[in-house]
Length: 364
Ligand SMILES: Nc1ncnc2c1ncn2[C@@H]1O[C@H](COP(=O)(O)OP(=O)(O)OP(=O)(O)O)[C@@H](O)[C@H]1O
Ligand SMILES: [Mg+2]
Image (cartoon, rainbow, N blue to C red; front, side, top):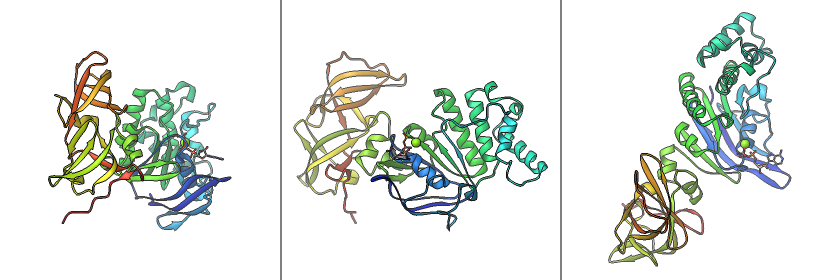
């Protein structure tokens, strides 16, 4: 298993920067999820780690050794793709065997490894079957066995679950995490599904337009998003955003806009007054309330019942959509006037000019 390091990686196609100045380290035995919208450069990054694509500039190191010029074979990295290819005319066993065909290992050693890999992903009883005789999940497990049988230094998985139905995806997700922890392999897992990223990653790297926006633990990314993009991309339902100004009065800091005045306490209490800021607040941290100067006036747009709670989707006073979590079964006709409050200590403040979280001087 290896520590994988990307140093100032750039990949340009023609004049287009698919990946820009990417610096990232995946620790030995870590599961890092690369998350981002379509076209942000996730697959390009994976292909460069695997050695299938050459970076335009920058270095890739495995355990401190520069492998940038090495072939995929020399890197000993296994890759599983979205629609993992199995040879249709070969049995599961022979499909796994293909990974070791040119390994130079003895027949005996190869068979022992196949048996071990099959056991690891629980497909021993399926080894004689053809891919067409297997379910989607079973095929994915054979593909995984095919990858682990090489005992690679690292695993790259590029949206390996996206072709599967929701419930299968859910169980395979847990299976993969369990496998990764059992064999303690370094793994990079690509997805554009933020729930998948939250549930699987030791850390998440959020990419956008070829750049790494933020890297951190799921809790960090969720609670302390560094940019407006990360704040809006991670979390379901998404974070609410309100525009306003920051004003200091009576020794306190206030978010003020035409419909609201809320005291900002907590992490951002020491922020400097500002003409324009964007306040982010998670739907779960808002609640429906009586009218009042610190309550946001809203109009019900739609209500989504989730069984354990309801998402009340509202039109806000500035035309923004605001989501508030209400108790399960909450109903109100569309167009009903409601109000919502939140604690100014749980808000996150962003600078609209830089789209980054507001810098606050550390109080002594
Ligand atoms: N061979 C290529 N030639 C030119 N442009 C390319 C090439 N490969 C990728 N790109 C461009 O680079 C950008 C990043 O592509 P990439 O496949 O890495 O995105 P991605 O994040 O994996 O997206 P998705 O979630 O859709 O798979 C895209 O804008 C894509 O069009
Ligand atoms: Mg891709």
